[in-house]
Length: 354
Image 1 (cartoon, rainbow, N blue to C red):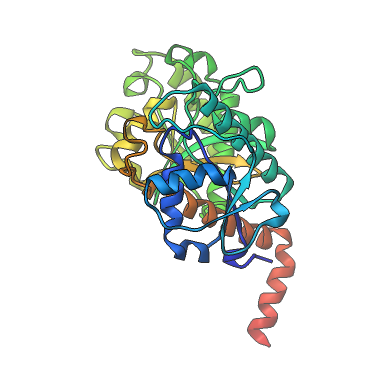
Image 2 (tube, one colour):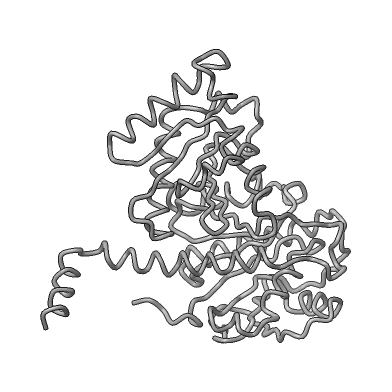
């Protein structure tokens, strides 16, 4: 059975406290109507967030708890995952702020694994100050991929624009070395399943961008597209996965060609993120597809330059909340209808003919 909206527990990791994470979180739930869609629990410290709330002159009420068993439906819960005071210095790249960001994140992921929260939205971190002996990951996605079952795929979403990444946080000069038919197959099957179960698209159409300029120009500008990408896509198409390409990336977005597809897979990070942020900055969401747990985040960073000034736009964070809840509901429906199709058909027939 699908939960009532307000009973969906939305976990939130607070991100870098010296950035805009706490601000966009609190601004999102300043609108009390948000509590009709879910019950949030922020993994942080209630005194720390109360300080941010006071500085920014916000009016939302925070409910501090010491365990998830104390969570109250319909309130903005703040789970105290640390007790000691933290001196926020907005705009400062600080190692201690990074460690609190990771403590919030790892505690929230543990709650997601245990089923104590239903979905997770992560506020921005600084990839440099989070590094330690205990946490040696480039960012959120790599850690989630290790902790949760499935194969993670970074998928940027804004309404019907969805851009996934074949490779993500690796140097450009290593992209070709990572490019294999096996990788393409794994990522395409991941996005195909995600489009069906998470976005309720019955027969997804997926486009793949070429690795090289003009998709290699028949081998004149690189051989990867002809020797690796095309054979992989051909096999998948023959198996019934509707994949197309590789397409020349330079004109694919400007010509509006992307609008014909339910998702686009870029070969590397900037090939996908530059057009995505150009088309949708401030409204986009980063969704980690392919995992058993649901996680989204806004499409921006810590924005130190405006932290603490009350200038941060919270729209992307709010969209991340909406997407997480939509995916949760879509999965519930998908799991129900695929659990026993024959039984569901029988129920439909009974209802139809009485």
